[in-house]
Each structure stands twice: as structure tokens, then as C-alpha cells.
Amino acid sequence: MISSPGHQGAHVNVFLELYNRLLSHFGPQEWWPADTPFEVVIGAILTQNTSWTNVERAIANLKEEEVLNAEALHEIPERRLAVLLRPAGYFNVKARRTKAFMSFLHEAYGGSLDAMFRQPLPRLRGQLLDIHGIGPETADSILLYAGRYPVFVIDAYSTRIFTRHDLIDGRVGYREIQSRVMSHIPPDVEVYQEYHALLVRLGKIHCKRTPECSGCPLGGVNGIS
DNA sequence: GACCAGGCACATC
DNA sequence: GATGTGCATGGT
Image (cartoon, rainbow, N blue to C red):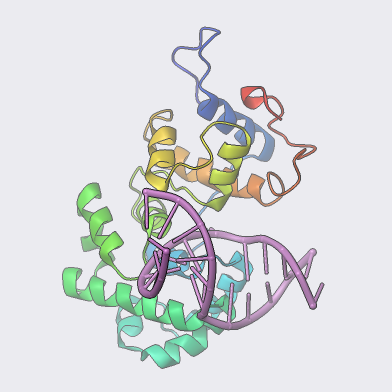
């Protein structure tokens, strides 16, 4: 639990309040579900607009074929990779994106994730965004969960929850939402990881389509349930 | 059978 | 800059 610095009545940090309530209600989520940082990176690409259970099947295929490593994934033909990625959906797209990342990793860092993660945050974030198929959420997931950089990940769930509870304006962009959150939460890798995971946990069951969102564990955050 | 899932690139206006 | 569309499997 994080305590709010200026907790003197009128100015409550609603982002912090939300985090504390989620943590109390659900407990630690212990994300990202992966054995290695490399697996986090690949999972981040594969989970784009896709349920995690489908990603798990594709990851299992990669492990089965023993290609879930920097060398083998760089060598494997895109066509054959696509077959293994089939259960994750968009398999042709994701095969291309995975190969694009592998090309970058080898050309820029000799295939070494450790070397890549030695780069300063702004530089590496820019490099990741330049890779075909890696957008803001995928880049930030890689940075936070694989590289342990203190960046907050914004996704469809967090956007919906923040909007629904009136913590942000519904139409602002990714960077705007991200900076809004990060300006309210001290930079801490563990907290950022946990917060994002908790938002996904909540988003799977609430803040979806019904206006009432009955039974929401957040109750009165920002006066809105 | 419709709708959804831990996005992104690209075309068009 | 905003909006629309293709990409694809598997669960509810």
C-alpha cells in the first residue's frame, strides 16, 4: 500500500486511491506470466488484441520446437514461424512482427537482450517504436516487464477504467494518459507492474459495456461507481 | 452466430 | 489529426 503525501482531505490522489483499492481487493497479481525476459518480449507481441490463453498455445508451440530463444527465432523462416503462431491469431502479421524484432535485436545488439536493456529508457523506447509492429503498448510492456524500466503501460482496459471512473478525459491519446498516471504515481517498477496487472484483472470483469457496472470493487473512487 | 480479446499499420478524408 | 479497415484464432 502506498500512502499519499498530501493526504489532507480535499486533494486525494485518485490514481493512488484506485491502486490501493485494487491491491486490497484482488491482492498481488505477480505479472508478467513468463519464464524469461525473452519470453516476455515475444508474449508482448503475440498478445496484441488477443486473449492470453491463445498466446499461451503459441508460446507452447515455440517451446516445443525449441525456438523460443534469440538465435533460433532469428534463423527460423517466417513461413514456418507463422505455422507455430497460428493459435495466437493474426499469425502472418505476428510472424512478420516477431521477425522484425529479431532482426533489430541482432543488428543493433548482436542478439543480446541484456545489451539492449543496458540502453537508457528514452533511447530504447524510441528504437522499439521504430520497429515494424511495435507500438506504444507493446514497447512499454517490453520495457516494464522484460527490461524493468519504470514506465506505465496503458492498454484498452486501463483506458476504459480510467475513463469510466472519470479519472481522464475519454478522448486523449496514449502518451497523455500515461503521463497523467505517472505524474500521480512515484516511479517504481514493482508498483507499475502490479498496477497494470490489477487494471487488467478488473477490466476482465468490470467496466465493460453496462453503464451501471454493478458490483464494482472500486465503489466510490472519485465519487463514481 | 454475434461479439470479444492485454494493437498496430496503413489508407483515406 | 481523426476515423475506418484488415489481420485470425478460440472462448462465451
